[in-house]
Amino acid sequence: MVVRRRPKPLLIFLVLFGSFLILLAAIYLFLSGPVDKNNHKDIEVVIPSGTGVSGVAKILKEKELIRSEFVFTITVKTKSHLYLQASTYLFRQDMSMEEIIDELMKGSTYHPDAVNITFKEGERITDYVDDIVENTNHSEEEVLSIINDRDYLDELIDKYWFLTDDILQDGIYYPLDGYLAPDTYQFKNKDVSVSTIIETMLDEMEKELEDYRSQIEGNVHYYITMASMLELEGTNTENRKMIAGIFENRLNAGMNLGSDVTTYYALQYPMTSDLTSEQFATINPYNTRASNMGGKMPIGPICNPTLSSLEASIEPTDSTYLYFVADKNGNIYYSNTLAEHDAKVQEIKDKGDWIW
Image (cartoon, rainbow, N blue to C red; front, side, top):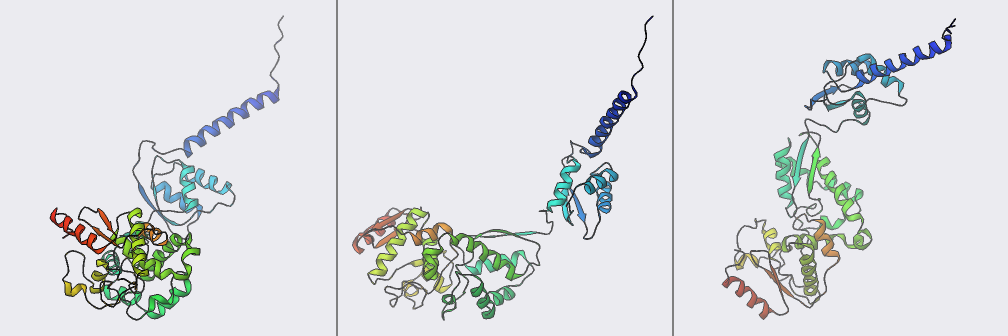
């Protein structure tokens, strides 16, 4: 006779309990998984300020981004120190519930009303004013009044170590010209304040200058002004360093820098055509072609330069050259004497490579 042993109650319980846990895990994985892993379309979701966890769950369920409000709510509440941030998000149905929760914790980087403004290197602050006017709700008059406001400029000088009273000299056209870092910036919307735009660019300039602070802090205006000329005269760091060395040689010799780009700025003309000899001779503290500018720098920057030009202004290349000229292809030629320089200019013209 075979005696059959009855299963022990504890073993039965463990088997059933284990099966139950496996079932719960399977249900949770299903309910917390992507609603549609093949749908990669962005869905805009607005979470208003003050919305609780259950409110967020309801919004996500209505957008068909989660399968269960209950599971979402329980999952969030079981996580310690977890805060869901109100904002506008872009979610997708191929995202898991955990991925959505992670995004809600970090906060959104999506701003549907954001504006991107590109400020190009080598451009003047008047060009930047046009960029601001084109991309925001501010008028030209409003922008100009703010960037030239003396009280505001004094505040900026107090805030930024690289801004000094040099920018307030009589004869300076636009005090902040040269000090705004060229780049593409994103702002919240078209109502962004002019001061926010300006200080965002100054913040970036501060980051760029920090590595050179010990070298330039006592004479920042000189280096920024030099860099602005190099930006327009050269095409890369190497030839800008060479030109910087030539400018220093000319300054040390008491010669005019003779930089045509300073004349264009002095006259506030675009660099799209040649100037007359009378225009090049205009007496102006920016114009290094003027007869009274021997051994002198322009009074201030003539454009907003890149970091490459700043590096060149700080680390000029030593040489004996006193002259340089560029052709229309961007090639730059260096000379020791005026006779050599004039001959090179004529050679460029004869080849049809003169810039104009």
